[in-house]
Image (cartoon, rainbow, N blue to C red):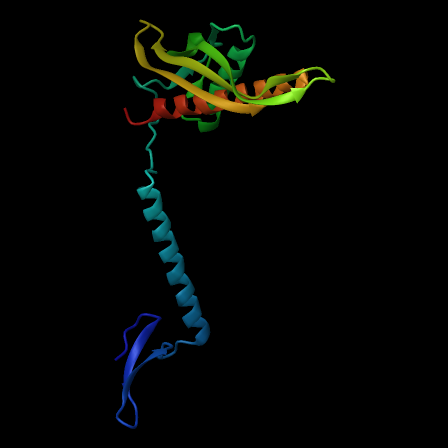
Length: 218
């Protein structure tokens, strides 16, 4: 009797007593061609899902269980404006808004005023760096050619601390850093915009990391 799998090789005897293998369709009672292909399609879907899961596990991806409170059982937190120790004006507002948005989106803990909070998240932008990564030779209006940078890398180092308000005990802290590259042009205004976009990408990434790590199993 052939196996119940949708695809198989059935071994059978011919009239001339000659044996061979033949690919066959299911002949189970009541199974139509449409049912056969539906079963086949469902089987391939499970195969693809299993293959993707194996690939993800092999690449180091995993599932992280987030807590429903911050370290120390904190459920209400205040997030004052970050401290900015650099000369990049306004960067403290970008980072402050980025981490507030992460908590607004997750809704795991409540962001409140300091007088109503159990703890506060204190952020400090420690350093900012801009480094040239690539150069090109340009002819400046008939004058001698000059080597100019056409690609830069912006990097930011920031520290984030979760401090309990009554006794100022540090419940959690991390130092985080990231860098993003951007292409420059001969227009200074456009270059400034691209630099600010790089800082915004860094802020979004680092504050997402701070939020997630803070809420991981501790």
